[in-house]
Length: 608
Image (cartoon, rainbow, N blue to C red; front, side, top):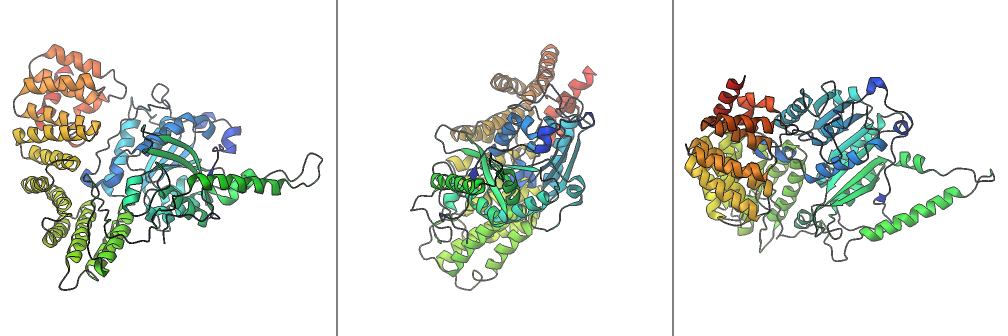
């Protein structure tokens, strides 16, 4: 049982400064391990990395986004790089996703970096592409850096050869690896395995954890205080049971209200911590004293303070308490949904538990196990005749989540079958918008863009306004773009930009505005496209917007402005001007439209 309350006698987290590796503190990097830093690019706050982070689309799942915990952990690494001995270090990143933290470590001077994730092949390719882009001439990382990408599925019981060959590591990093409670045990097993491979016991493990208080409450796990979710403490308890000690070394608040927080924690073997903190066996007179006992008393007092500061409110719910009003559907782009079940029964209760288990497996890339958990319920207690209304609601939600799992497995037709079953059970129920959104995603995977447009439209009919409407509207515009229906796409891009702005999603709003400008260009309205891009160029320090602006100037016949804009943008750090000759890169990663990409190629050919 995963409880959200604590017993006062249970060790949780100690708060202590991270002690740097003894080897690193005493031995400077040699000339043969000089690190891979490009001196002019990396700082503690801006590492100059050029990362593609396409988000949920294309089967990347949660790994396709650079989350806040990665940014905070990167800043912390930069501020503590000398103490950590990053210059010349060997670094392993767990759950790397885009590779942001590991590549940042390389830009700070790490000699060898191994990026690992248990996600899809497309996610691993994304990490490889990001590594190659930043190791290219002019990038943030020296080309001599040894950067590898490997699949590492936690819980498989075997360290991949690419990881074993590079071990031992000086530093192990990971961001947003601890939010999935189902992954805590496998993650701790991996950390133990990696630390066991470090014979000198100097390997440091630091993780970034983003507190998701709302998600924890929706999942019935309660709260650990203002702006602190219980997931980190649950991870610490799991770690303690496996002989590991978790120490919070930094906490950063990302908003004035204190509800968006990220913690940085270190993890080490319990015996390693004891060795590090062991008091001297002799006192000042040379006799064996009671320093050990005094140390134990001090540690117990510190632990008591920590426990009192982290204690949950008495009214916090137990995770095991089944609440039929809480179903966390885990739908990318659409908020979690509450389902009201008037009469909870065996089917709805089992479905709730199965979805929670499947979500945990989904989040760590173990899609086959997620599917198994959901299918067992659909073929079992929820598969009987004469379903009640509560059964239908539970089945619809379960089928919908099964469709999400299959989308991330690129099983487009199977995903559509699951979404169809969800909509058959509840054609206009609470799960219907998510099922329609997911089915549209799957149809895009089959290149059935007309079908996707239709399903996005049905989704918007059910949720026409509010925060949930922004992503479906943007995705419908993307499908309309594929069909060349530019005027309709412009309307949706503009509406999506407004909705994202209302949601305070500034980055997404600017992406929608840029896409609207691209669609204006394709529709033949080059002056309007140019005006929109000029506005964005004033608002954003973006090389991509300026590159598109140069292309529109060129197509409009203003070669001088095109050249000036191009020269200006190439002064931007990490602009990667050389990549714009690659039309496939422009259309796949930068999401340029065909005509705009052609205009850029024509412009660059003339310059060469």
